[in-house]
Amino acid sequence: MLAASLNAHPEIICFLEIFNYAIDFIGYGVPGYDGKNADDHALRDRDRKAFLHQRIFGDHPEAIHAVGFKLHYEQIWQVPDVLEWLVAQKDLRVVHLKRRNLLRSRVSQRIAEMTQFFGEPIPRPLTDLLTPAKALKALRHPARATKALRNVLSPKLPRPQAQREPITVSVDECRLYFAWVEENAAQYGSAFGDHPTLTIYYEDLLADREAVLHELQMLVGLRPRPLRVATRQQNPEPLRELIANYDELRAAFKDTKYAEFFD
Image 1 (cartoon, rainbow, N blue to C red):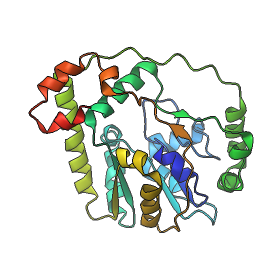
Image 2 (image 1 turned 60 degrees about the vertical axis):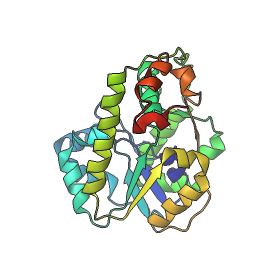
Image 3 (image 1 turned 90 degrees about the vertical axis):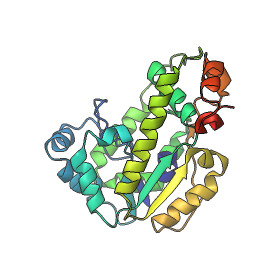
Image 4 (image 1 turned 135 degrees about the horizontal axis):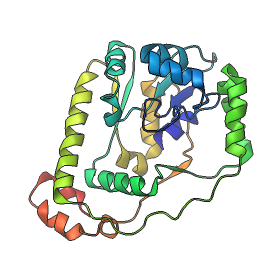
């Protein structure tokens, strides 16, 4: 949702999970970039710093004033050279996206793994896909942009029925996950301690998207403007409906700081 919002700004390019090695393509997620391109794959595998210089933070249309990408905690350990390089870029702005309710985060992750749906875009008309801003961003690689547009327009298979049976999450699994997220948040927050940083909570983004995105645009030096979101929340149901052993978990964490995670 955050990346889609940023890409709605004509002066921003926000790539997605370009260092997600669990997928067989580079998760660019913006016009003009083909995630299946063999040369890009070879460059990323051979020299990740050169890949960042040439493909991510290289030349862009003059109108583009802010460029970045999405990087999960679990992806960072695979690319320590990338972390080292990013920390050394003192002009880099860091947006640290967190979630207050780590239980809901874990449940959403488990459901996504079972259904293989990690984000569902809201259908948009062709006129929305062919905006001047998107065309401008695609100018650097028109051939790849054409291929990307063809992929958008190609018929898609119907979405499988999402997993809606309540899931079971063990107490130990929760404890380990909560500790892992907190440790990573602290570690990488500290790593970028010398950088201009904005911490955003997902819950705040849902509650007051306009205010959060206003602050984010100010961080990267742009005049704030309304940004359209083209995604929808996937698991909005109460946790009691999503977790089969909800009462067990609630009792286990009753006298801990995690008690606030329960509805």
